[in-house]
Image (cartoon, rainbow, N blue to C red; front, side, top):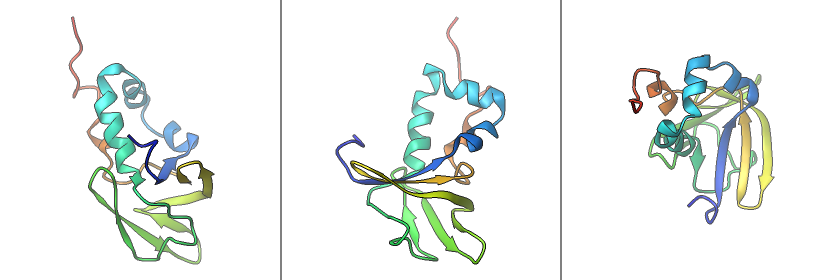
Length: 121
């Protein structure tokens, strides 16, 4: 579905994933979490190519998941929904990625916890 569309992905860095609680990260890698992982990816994806030159201070963009994220510029850093853009303009065949230092606020990560999934057996 995403491979045939042009997108901007705000991708948490390895350090951002490392800051997640170990039980949440471990659970995210299980087959039972597949739906939540898609929601998380969708929350970090916009269906248009937005290189840093096209990002507008104060602009609100709608994610594939349907939530709104806000871009903010300052003398210190540039943010998307309170996550700092640490590596901008990583070009790909179907769009661009911006590395961010944390998962976007209000992301479906918040709903992923060890008590929310049922396991067989």
